[in-house]
Image 1 (tube, rainbow, N blue to C red):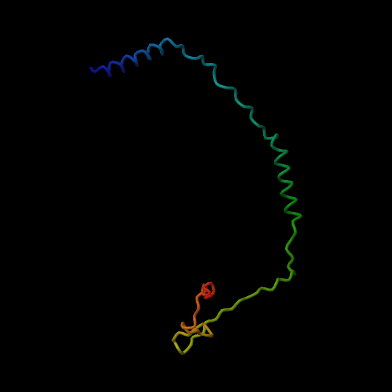
Image 2: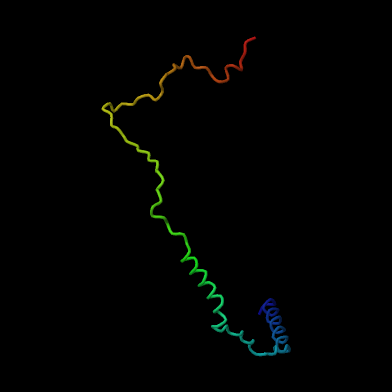
Length: 111
């Protein structure tokens, strides 16, 4: 065996010896049971909840059948087919490129 294996065996044998010397903890038994809730103890909260539900159902506002409905705005979009399948310009005035002036042209001043 290698010295490393011997060291591991010695280490675990020391741990076993310590475990044998240590006493097991005392067992005190199971904890006490919690007292059960009896059915009559639930009567008050259940009765209160039932009363609130009954009052809500009896006194809720009923929807009026005679209430006027509000007018509804309707947008109708219709598509019309044209006989000329070509494209048309959406610009009303077309400026030629020769008259175009850059936005920064006013920054250049000839003094």
